[in-house]
Length: 96
Image 1 (cartoon, rainbow, N blue to C red):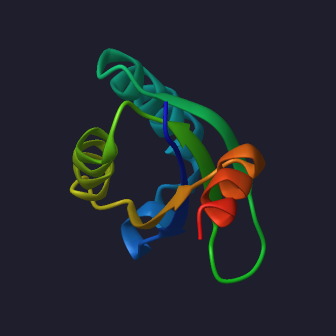
Image 2 (cartoon, one colour):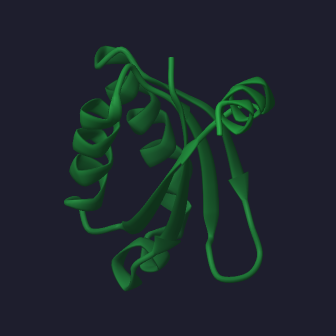
């Protein structure tokens, strides 16, 4: 299953409701699971982004749909990266 790294920033609304953030994460995990995806890890970070999530999802369409759904709630803005494992990286690099 492809891996994605989601970089999240709280919106003003999300920051104002920061105490609810763990509950929103739990709800997000359930939403992802229902769609056949998984939020594997979540990190609170310092710097440009507030949270980093490591996500496994069946395909790009699924993860895009799920993150757009989360973003539409108004609490976070997301930037998503498709991640390749070291093994995948080595295979891709050797094919060049």
